[in-house]
Length: 111
Image (cartoon, rainbow, N blue to C red; front, side, top):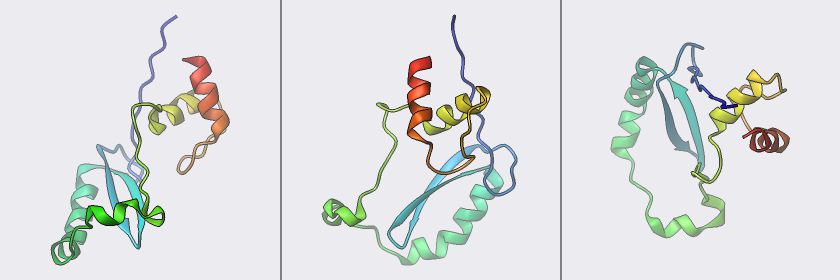
């Protein structure tokens, strides 16, 4: 039997449908937020003066373990897909934040 997983992003600000995930960093911590076009525009507009006055981080500091940035790779399933699958299979999974390892394992076994 074939299985089709449909992932719908929810806007983290107003709960509506999101169109994109916006990544940003503050105080050495990286964040991602799912937003609709209007809220994404508001975020970018609010950050624009700080981005314009700031400077990009050089590659030299990226090997410092305190500044490691973790990014999703194609080797692991997308967290949004795993979360959607878990919710559709009545598994207890948080709406935001880290997805438990047992959920990833169940997702892999079902695939």
